[in-house]
Amino acid sequence: MKIGTVERLRRYPVKSMLGEELGEAAVSDRGLDGDRVTGLLDAESGRVVSAKNPRLWAGMLGLTAVLDAGRVVITGPDGREVGEAELSERLGRRVRLAGERPPGATVERAVPEEVLARGIEEKVAVTENEIGRAAPAGTFFDFAPLHLLTTSTLDAVAAEAERYRPNLVIRTEGEGYVENEWVGRELRIGPDLRLRILAPTPRCAVPTLAHGPLPRSTAALKVLAEQNRLVPLEGMAALPCAGVYAQVVEPGRVKVGDAVGLD
Image (cartoon, rainbow, N blue to C red; front, top):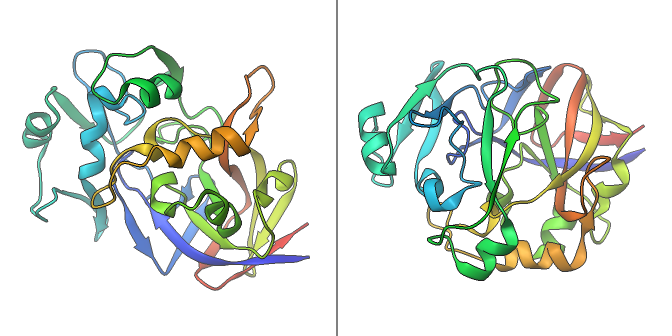
């Protein structure tokens, strides 16, 4: 049953940095080719750097990472390439680039409600979470290797897709958070690619932050908190959600305009 078409493809070569728009890409069990292949590690704590703790790392969303002939290139707002030493200077903490996620790697996640109430500069409660539990070893995904978001959800939130960092934006006709109903089912995209939808995507403070030229927007999280609180996985509390996580059942290529079907 056709449920939509692929409207946008996005890749983020470095975790928590801005990414790049694609017309097509190969997809394997490691997700979209070149996605989250690199991360920054905090030299002091050893944790993976993530804008989920915006007091420390909101500056990550002012940096852009792209792949150029297989090489990860990081640029600042002025478009000039930035190296590891300058990254540390810009972020205010010593960091190092890593091409593989260490076993058991964790990130700090600030409690979103406290960030909304007190702002990104204040010290708020954080939780420490292991990342990549449903992704291949070494990758820098929060949970699973693909993140899908529908235009129906974006319309409901009235927010830009870039705030939620999806890999695939799927044009759908329904109203509201239609991808909630896909959890536990499979999608077929184009002639070959098949995905299993694992869970709703819980949202942190990241969508509310400035993303490059996009200003801060607390509504990007507040609307979800009011309209779409779900329990993403058994044992978790109900959280604001937008989009879904997926694993690859059958690899293939995906391109903008591909039909999306629900098995």
